[in-house]
Amino acid sequence: MTYVFQFFTAMLTALFVENIIFTRALGTSWMFYLIKSPKEIIKSTVLLMVVTTLSGLIGYPLRGFVYNSEHRHLLLPLLYIAVMAVVYLAVYFFIQKVLPKKYEHWGLNLSVAVFNCATLGSLLVSSAERLDLISTIGYGIGMSLGFGFATVMLGYGLTRLEFCKVPKIFKGVPIALIYLGLLSLAFYGLVGHQLPT
Image: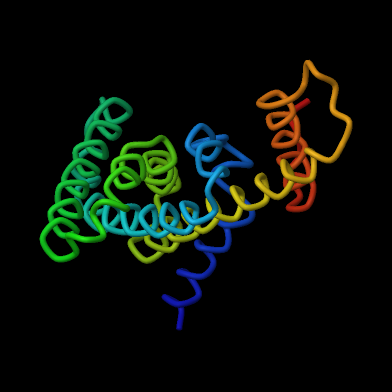
């Protein structure tokens, strides 16, 4: 029962309290691309979930070797990038051999899902907080769902902003960043974070 509680606590924390988009702004460039196509949001969220789960499973036992080093702040990101590359190759060959018809649609999103700062950020956060294996997997799944949740919220907000009289200088990316900043502040207020003074 405690493992289930740990899993869901880590997942809900990553989904709402420490949303990778709203608290750390990781993966926002990919998110702006996904807003244009709602089908891509689901594909990308599923791929991100698979990648972060597999990377967490492989990287968790390996990070113990790096913790004892005095250069762990340099070696840990390199370790996780190597793990992400191995996961990329494994998922790439799996999709290509088992699901060749799906590869056309999933191939581009796979490379972006693996090699982005959201995936690396979730692995680094779970190791910095020294989460156990169950919590690391829960955090990765919650981060992926949180990424999809934030993308849907931003897409919905931007479609609503199209009907507003936005000044010409703010149209496009500037208003999207302002809206994203306001959402981030709202989430910070809801979960009880205090802004630095």
